[in-house]
Figure 1 (cartoon, rainbow, N blue to C red):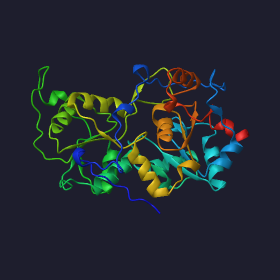
Figure 2 (cartoon, one colour):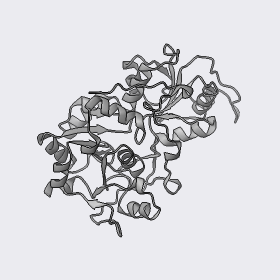
Figure 3 (cartoon, rainbow, N blue to C red):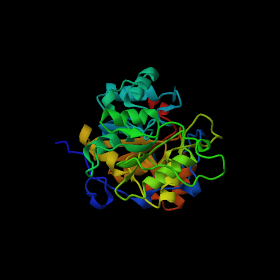
Figure 4 (cartoon, rainbow, N blue to C red):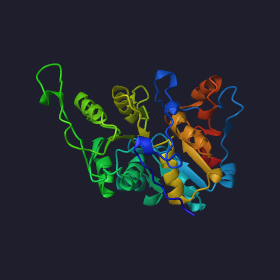
Length: 346
């Protein structure tokens, strides 16, 4: 039986079954998360708790394989070598494959077109993002304000996803400081338009003015504070370049507003409940595959799934050794693999 996914966003009326907000799980590793493209086939040193993944064992133990996207299946516009072949072999073997990305910049239609272009044989309904979860839950909740729009720090793709579920928004696009003053300070912005929520995600036009508007809207405790995800950085093709993610913007708003958001994406509960309701998965027969320990691996560990880290994105064997030395068992996967490509030949 599938469970209904829904919750009341207003902080004073949150049902614990529907929503899990864990402020303390906002993990900042040594103050910053560093993307890396380092490849290694080595087992983490002194790591008896993390096992190298074996293809035959994975196929025997799991019915559902949940993959992160950026850093696991692709980097930028290119598939990571071996990832389409491995995913397609799972599909051909009758396994359920679900792609759960924390990236809300694109619509599901756009992600589906990308998977087809890169050679993945997955169904559109098998792709889930925090944008979809945000739109679904906002459409089912309202606190008497469901007719009002949301102020959105995000992209056109996120705005389109919200609109498909009847959630109107404004705020996407540039909002320049120079449009408000010719001095070094802005002391007032117009926040007279009534809204139901401030939704914060990756925004390539994030600015001082947008931050000022967001935190002033959030002075009203009836206005909900929603974040799609808290990934501090994106994995990218250039190992020496840090690419800021949604989490950097979410933290700016959090600190200035003095409020904590309801977070939709991994490692938090809303996206897990959405997946369970849509696919009816058994967590004990599901494997979460990711490249980030503070989102993907923590997500799987927190929700009863086994986990596998691949070294093609953010974290690698050196990080696992460090996490174990710090006692961060919640960040340690059950398995590791240098890449999905190595599992093709095993």
